[in-house]
Image (cartoon, rainbow, N blue to C red; front, top):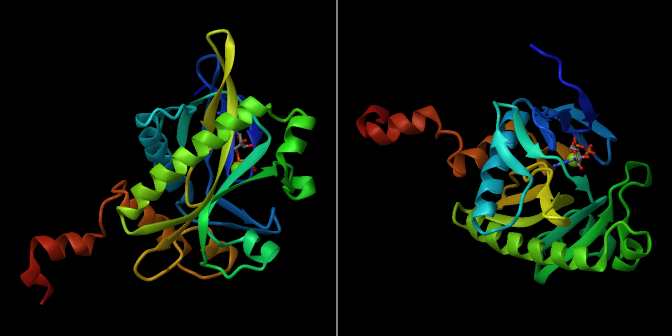
Length: 256
Ligand code: ADP
Ligand code: MG
């Protein structure tokens, strides 16, 4: 096996040089962090599930003409993506109050917001990913106004689409974080969706019970962390139903 060059190791993924120019391999780890690295742990099987969940969601988004970095999944933990120049912002969309906005604005967790709110955070661990305004973004050339217009428009379309997709499987999409990058194509830069979409960077609540099915289970020590990631994958039909459920439905007498 030839050794690949490691480009970057982050909190949840490792990036390797891809087989063709302009590509990189994203390797999904089981490592989990919260509070900007203050809490560290592992969630067994998370990397495998996030690789599959992100593949599935990126492919669904391509179907509605959102440009993404995704090329193809290579194996259980790796996917090939187009190498992009990451815009150093975390784009957060909120449908329901949860997480940092609850503290910052004194809202009740679970309060439905009158309309989706898009927020920008600077991707900078040393500064604790501060909330920034469009004026900061354009003044410091993190992105242009035109790029931000495109990012916000993609983000709201993604939010509408994913809300519907998850509502269809009994899940409320509370909020999520996206990253975008620039890709040079046809003599100009294009904005493409990058990074990942997974329970690491989305809040998912079960519609019926309100149960949290995302990384908040890890952040808040709620237990059943692995199970939450599996449940998302199961509802998306990425992994099969539980074995006993298969037996139950195919042979009901067996359960009596
Ligand atoms: P971090 O700890 O910085 O969040 P991760 O563990 O999430 O890192 O690893 C993924 C890193 O790769 C992130 O810094 C992300 O911005 C970057 N990235 C994601 N997609 C791409 C891409 N298509 N091209 C280049 N970099 C990317
Ligand atoms: Mg990350």
